[in-house]
Length: 82
Image (cartoon, rainbow, N blue to C red):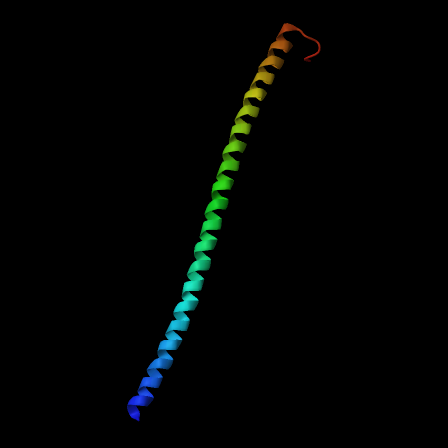
């Protein structure tokens, strides 16, 4: 009888460990899914940042050209630029 009791205890422990392992596997799957979403979002944000930096560079070039144009107009005596 003692052997039967120990066998049932071990079976109960095994069932508990399997349940815990299943929970851990679900948690790992959820974390991997979250990691994948965050990686994709990071890539998208990086792409948006590159686009914004490119637009900023273009705006800086236009600004420099406008400043140079205004500078030239001021020194050529153009009354519209003043």
